[in-house]
Image 1 (cartoon, rainbow, N blue to C red):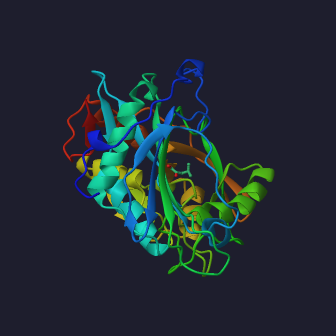
Image 2 (image 1 turned 90 degrees about the horizontal axis):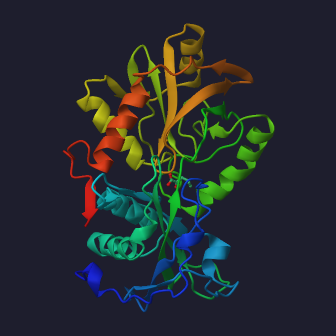
Image 3 (image 1 turned 45 degrees about the horizontal axis):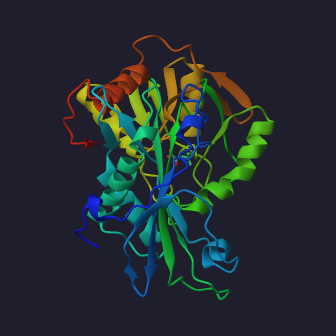
Length: 357
Ligand code: COI
């Protein structure tokens, strides 16, 4: 399958498009799934020919290994409608690389990067009418792979399904969020699966996040597993702070997801001449920065969330409020720059845009 081109993937088109039912002015994140999906099976030691078929349920046995032992990984990506109408699949090779990192960590077979990108290209092209034109909207793309072998014994699966789903989305958060620094539960420990985008990382975060929600927060700000002393990430996104005018973000470890938006924002910040620090940032440093008024911004960065302003950070039960966002803030400047590159208003100097004409 290595050098297959997008046009060689067989397509069965739906004769009942659901596109007309979608209200593109009121897109709820993750609610609408486009007309088609791509499916590709791993059997007998190789990936087989993918196919694009109408989106819908598929039947599986409850004995499939993914359900019991958690071999399931995914990606979150986006495609944008550019100013002149072309479709821009954003940084697909960076996502391919991370998908493979996740697959490797879960002892699953990797995909050739060109093959992965060709699959995305073909599917997005078939459902190109689903890529929104509305300001702030995009097509969310969800590649996923999971173990399908029918077996109850504890073992590495010998069969997998790789699937891609897409759906039009609007903003992930509709207002600045409140986050709670977690000092009891753990998302990931060094040496664990935190850097991989595996399903269990998210499932394991639900309960502590529910507790945080009940206490009035939107998300948990995860800290290191050993001491709860250093900030890791926020589960649905990486986090960044502006302290004394410097853009500071936790350095990557095996417990933190290597966010594609994180990387894009840091690259743009450096180009803009903003002083960037990727390093450990302690909860204490954060609390001190609030006490001394040296922290001016806190925000999340992720594919789904894009750049999500944080309004309140709770540290050991005390709420610290960020000052209101000023026009020309670091996060606004970087978000607009990223947006302009994706939509073709500014040159793509890093080869991030993969254009589907
Ligand atoms: C993404 O940003 O794409 C994510 O995967 C985060 C979340 C929606 C699961």
